[in-house]
Amino acid sequence: PLPVRLFGEDESPISFAHVLQWLARDQDCHLTKLHAFRHTDSKSDSPFLSAESAYFLQRTILNLADSDLQEAITACEKLEKLEKSLPADKDYLRRREAELNASLEQAGIKKPDEPLISEILIPVARASATRLEEGVSKTVVGAIAIAEKTLAESRAKLLSLKEDLGKAKATVETHNSALKDAQTTVDSLKGKAINLEIEKEKARNLPPSLYCRVPRPVAEAAGCQAFCEWNAPSENEEAKADLLASFKRDAEKQLRLCQSNAASAATEQSRIEQDSRKLSSTISEIESKSEKLNQKLRDLRAPFQGIRDNINELERVLKRQSALESSETTLKDKVRRAKELQEELQSRHKRTESEFVDEFAWTVARIFGGKETATNCRFTREQISTSVTYHDKDLTSAAVTALQVFCFDLAALSFSCRGRGFHPRFLLHDSPREADMGEAPYGRLFDLIVEHASESPNFQHIITTTTSPPEEYQTAPYLRLKLESTESAGRLFCRDL
Image (cartoon, rainbow, N blue to C red; front, side, top):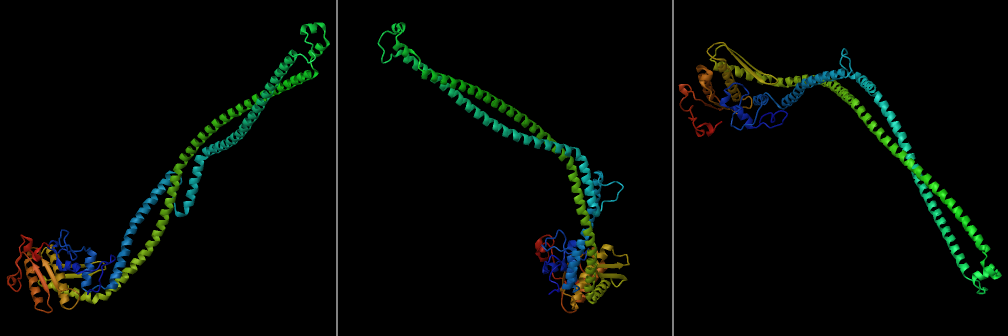
């Protein structure tokens, strides 16, 4: 089992499908980079591996990584990722700070020759905005105050008029009722007077009980005492008529008074109603004017709301900058300590690393034919870097690159054969071509593989090639399978890799 079972922070498990990508590189990768396992057009359905994950996988298989180192690498990567995001935030905050200061300068909050507004000057900026707003809106605010005062007084007066109108209506109803009663009394007295006259007329036409049945004109002409007594008006009737006439006069006087009072009350009601209508119209005009003034005030204050918003945002930006500077300092210290810890943990594997570097250098020397080469293999914190400086001119730089990748893979296999690391001692190089490497190094590859095969333990190294290997390796036991590229069934594993 590998000393590390998971990749970095995503905690995805390391599977054989990951390892197999290194053991069997795509031919389209052309041995260009150590971490280039699968071409973008590959149909192998292999799980994705980033360059960092590929390097970590190689380090793990070579036994140059453990769980402590993995945790340190993961923590360091997180911190570095966070650290890289800080400059973008800082640049945005600085740009936004300049934009907000320019906006406040245009609004008159900040003078052109003054430095940028600092966090301590935010209250001063707010006070300046308030003074400017009060100066601009002072006249309108005064007019609104007068309008509101007049409106309040008018509404109070209208309320009083409504109360007076209610009283006037009650008075009119009272006087109309009294007028109706007076009219009824007068009409009643008139009826009584008429009835009295009718009774008197009837009495005159009815003879008294002692009447001698002498014709009335004769009795009247003769001066009959009985007739004269009968024909004389009764004192009670005269008194009654006088009293009735007196009542009638009083009733008619009361009627005239009620009519006058009712007319006066109706006039007062009409006046109050007219005053109420005028005052209601005045109130509507004042309300309309007040609304216009308030709208004007809102229009005047609207820009200052934007100014206050800019001041508030500037305050947030400045606080964010302060926090960012503080966290940046802290983060840099954390990154430094994380790198130191990672390097300290990596130093545990220095002996194994040194042995693999020697294995790689020896493999390079064998493949390049013992000619003078300068070989370098470094396991840095982030990656694995190799370089081969070849002084002859018979190889191109592309050939040197392909050979050093091949040498790295072969060195990892032979390193495992020597009992170091966790390489499964299986390699598949799909179509490395002589044209890509040069004739001599291409032949030495097979020589070295055959030399390894004579040693124990066993390993398996498959090379598929369209270029014929050296003549001595073109038969069994070295040549195991002939392939065809025309159809998938004729290819390695009977499928397109």
